[in-house]
Length: 434
Ligand code: UGA
Image (cartoon, rainbow, N blue to C red; front, side, top):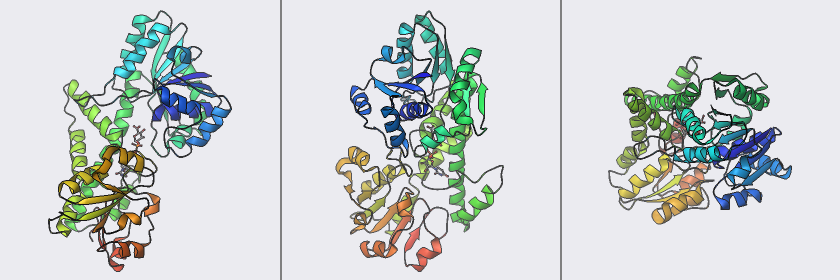
């Protein structure tokens, strides 16, 4: 099938590459000429495990193309995916201007039937709006479909190639047939393609992310309670998660959820609810809990240093909002750095992948280490903000030797509490009594 993908950001590039991998002929379109140039020359623009290999292969096989020209890029396509940004506006609602602008442009240039697919996370009713905008200018037949993505950064290729489910929102038989064919190779193991109306598909995406964020905030509150009552959240997590109705995944407490999806989507669903005069109480609480959780370690650090962080120096391991990504958007580490610096402390940071992004954002606010152990030199304590695998079994003697005093504040519960005590560390984590 001939496919176009408008927008070569994270979702667009993964979508385009994975569709090429199943034999489709894919053209990706972006207004950023520099990016298009790089991609056309085989230079991948995002970090995502496993993607580069597929990208290189499909580029070489001539199944993957890049252009800045929308008209040329969609001319022969049967399906056009819109993978455009929907940043939060000032009031928290999703800004649809990128999508609606492209819709208008498409309306003006389409000459034959196309299926136009909203892949971006968009508020309920967007497919209808896109349909309306294109229809204003276009005389030929077309359908607008909602097909939300459920990719996780770090495992996006796997999530795309082997999805738990594919959600397709359309009431058009013609579009349903095209989309069913396109996605058939991805659900060979029997996972469902769920056809529904456009609005239900749009809401499914927000509901899924909001539910996952709720799980996290809920466990973060249980962790606080564990500390206050003298229980161990690792035990409670296992006890709770063994119930199939609850499930083991996404119950890990920590220093809050970050990234480009959960914070934005929870906020946007609250906003959409307000617009229809509904106060979504649970989600408001989920956001409040998460805001507080990002600074969960700060009172502990303060207490250990007698409420005086002036002149103290901290090593921070992990800046990315989660492992296996260089993405630092809404990363809890950034909030911690702000609080530490405001209290007069200095911070040296190390992250296996996110250093370039951190330097771009923080400049001289922090110091940068090339290596996880170099990061520890002359630090009064180590703070762990992201659970990268390389931090899981470190050389504790080296850590002890480098720090001024053996203190670790771990926002991701990487180590066993009693082992750390045996090793002579002052060790504090989340929801486990030290
Ligand atoms: C999330 C969803 O998991 C994807 O299904 C969805 O497609 C994507 O948003 C999106 O809307 O595009 P992502 O933001 O890449 O994916 O990251 P997750 O792996 O879901 O992690 C989100 C945050 O939750 C991270 O900060 C992570 O540290 C935190 N988290 C996750 C916890 O604190 N505890 C957990 O048990 C799990």
